Structure formats: C-alpha cells, structure tokens
Length: 511
Image (tube, rainbow, N blue to C red; front, side, top):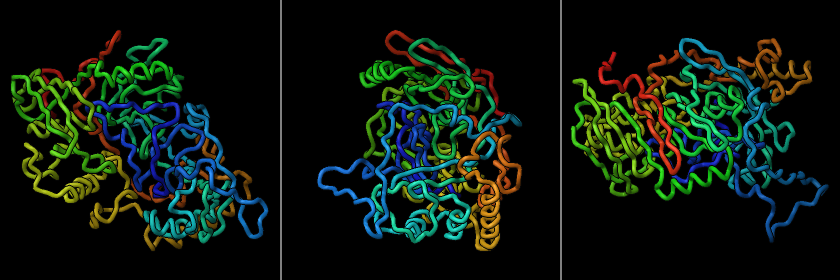
C-alpha cells in the first residue's frame, strides 16, 4: 500500500509517553521503527512519506557549512522548520474525514492524508528511485511513477518530476496517500471521571489509545477530541488496543509529570481481570518469569532467561467448568506481561489472538516450551493472521511483510503487473482532472461532502490505491474483543474503577 512509504516516529506532540508501560501495554505502544505505516503524530509535521524523521534534520551544528543560495547548478535546500512542542490534534485534523456506525462497527471513510519527513541520513546522495526500490518495495516502481504524475510526491514543497532526483541533507518529503482505517467496535467511550487535573475513560476493546499503524481517526485521542472536545491530553498509561477498561489522561504537563513520578516510585496500583483457558488454581499464584521482546515490529514477547525481570500476581475469581475468571496485579510494567505470564502458566486468555495461537506449538507456550526458532514463530503467527485477513491484530499491513514473514500462498493487495497499464491510465486521468480543477490533492482531504464528485477526485475511492481494489469482509463486533480488562487504577489521592465486563460474570458461557 502507498502508506508503506513511511516509518513510524515517536509519541505525538502534546501526548507524552509514559516512562513505564502497564502490564498489558503493547500493540499501540511500540515505537520501534518499521517498514509499515507510521504511528502518526499530532504535531505540525506528521510522520512521513518516506521514513521517520532523522536527527540530521536539526539545524546545522558547528563544522557544518551551509549551502550558498544561488550557487551554480545547486539545488537550494531550505532548513527544517522549527516544530512547536506540545501541539495537540486540532479541528483541521478532525476534519480530514468522517465516520459512520454500521453492524456494530465504527467505520472511517477513506481519505487523503499527507505523510511527511525530512530525509534520513542514509538516503543522502541517493535518488528517490534507489530509496523506493531498496526500502519501500510494497508497490512496483510504476506506482511511484504514477504518483508523481498525479502530483502525490513533493520535495521541499515542490512536485517531484523525476524519481532520479538525488536527495540531500534536510530535504523535506511529502507523500499524499489514500488511507483506509480498519473498523473498530461501535461501543462508545464512556467518561468515568473528569476534574481539573485528569480525564478517566472506560476504553472499549479494539480501539488504540493514540494514532498508530493504520489507525488515526479510530483512536481514543481522536474520538475524545472530536466528540467530547477534550484536547491536548497526556496519556498517563497505555492499554493494548485489544484491552478494555480504565484509561487515564492528564490535562496538563505538570499533572502528567507528577503521576509519572508515582509510577516510577511504584505508587500506582493496577488491577486487571481476564478470562483464561481451563481451571486456574484456587490459591494465589505469583509469576516472576523474565520477558523478552521477540519482535517490536510484530509485537510479540516470550518468557526467556535473557528477558527483563517482572512479576505478576494472579487470583482466581470463578470457574464455570471450562474457563476461569482471574484477577491480575502486575507489579512491573513489561509489554504484554499479563498475557505472556498466563501463557507460561498454561492458562492463556481465552481469545488471545497472539498468545493462545497454535503457532506456538502443541503446548501453546506452556512452561516456556516453544519448539520453534523466533523466526519460525513469527512467520507462523503472521501466516495465521494473513490467512484470516486479520493482520491488524498484529498491527501490521501487507506492506510490512518482509520475505521472511510472507506466506507466498496468501492473497495480497499489492498491485500486480497486470494493473500497471491501468495505473498509468488512472494517473493520466488524474493529471487531466487536476489541470481542470486548480485544487491540489492535498487540499481536498476534508469532509467527504466537500470532495469533488467525480470518480477520480472522490474522497472515498482512488484509482491509485491498492486497498480500494480489495473487498474485505467486516469482522464481527465480538471478534474485536479480547477478554482482558483494566478494572482499577489507584494512586496517592485517587482511585478509579470500571464496571466488570459481561464476559467476567460467574455464569458466563462461551457461545
């Protein structure tokens, strides 16, 4: 997909990253660069068409010579603009598109979006053609050529005319793409508490906390800003996308820092509830197995002696003859800590799409026994979700799949050679429409009712977009729920609860 022209960057401006993750943090909390779509930020400069922002984009330091303006045959490269820190998402971001509710799902209408970045250090001295052919191979070069003809690629805010142009330090790249966001549950985000310091919500499963991967408008940050006018919030902790429950935000940087200090000092108590496979022991169980991140890109961890020390305390609440409801208290904050420790104990979360998968082998990782290399494990996990068309569970899209992760028999949304002539014709058609209508593509990324009503300029369809060519079956709302819920957060002077979910009731039975 066109979005694979970018890599993710750090946490959004004004949305501070917590110093320590919670025991279930993971999916949308990763900041490891990847070949997939970025984790868009809310700052003035979004993440990027062709990569993450590079440190060299800063102002020239001592010993660096500035380019002389007007030098013979020398392209003038403007210095990067200074970015305002602490800028949150605003109305111009919320106006990019709209959403609708259908079949228990919240769906975002496809929209045009600009990925932006300064030139990465390793690209300096290389052509765009070289960068696209070596690092961004999700689409054939014909796609990028068509994108140029359609006015989608800009270098230093001027349309790119030729892929052979050589990149220089501080070059600023902008790529206009057609974004498709996966649906999430239509369950509303309920406010649990609000005062002058904090906002506390009950997060539904399937909704990421902040923009990441393919998610932007279907995120807690965007929904709170657009529907509740709650902006410039500072997440005080994170919940994995599939985890529901208590989620806290600070309204000011000072409050955020104060509570982060409490987190660092272990003054914050966290309590979760989950439903696991089988009959969990009646006595309290403490697991202290170290956890190692197998892949930041795929978001998978495992128990391993080389991992970081961590500790989780479990207590069974009920057993219905097939599965158990368990209270979980993570005393440390490793990624996916609760889920990995339950897998190790042989009682994975009942519908955990990662840690209760056959990809881990016959024992599904019980006791840390995994008869596969890490590479084999990742390949099998990706293949399982690729076959189910559920790569979003791993926060991946097909453009993220390197040869080592790809199942060659699985369907792909990439443009094939038989599409290239059609692609070129579409680009020519868009070129003609752009000449007739003075608007640029990047200025029509507004609400759908304001989009130009033609097949080419329609906000929801795009002739260059591979995703538009696919027909994907919508997930069922119940398929977007994982049985892990943040039940209680307590710190000095505050304590917040979320209602017990339906699947945690004593008499609940699996459908």
